Image (tube, rainbow, N blue to C red; front, side, top):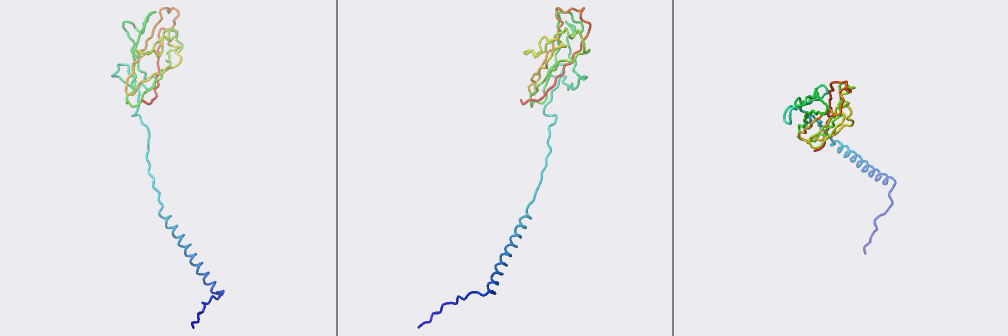
Length: 209
């Protein structure tokens, strides 16, 4: 006859329970230390690198010049009023300095965008007259045309009013003709000034071609 005995299931003593609790705490603490160590190790692999570049726009992309010579020669900057290109008004058969009533003199001025990248919007301002108070300029009439469009048509030289805008395509030239007329009905006895100098300012800005 076999005598089967049931294994002891006696409860743990307080000392045994304390020893097992300390082991678990030790394992958890060890895991926590290892976890912190892993975070520190990963953080040490971070790095940063910077690269820099400098950029700008120079004067090689777009430029407008003027010429009093022709559509192919004599182009200059004419950047200030004292440097203004002197438009050559005809001396024969009509002498611009000795106009008679009913006569018209004309001169040409060429504008060119020199770089070929962007169109130029050119604003022709009303002229500055010298001397400023000028009875001759009050009588003379001016027309500015490109041969197709009259941008200014028969306006008093001293009273042209609002500016006008023209387009000079990228890399191309625009020929302007300035016509100045002493009207047929002008009374020389009412004109005290014998000369009038007009300076037209033309300001340009770029536009996408």
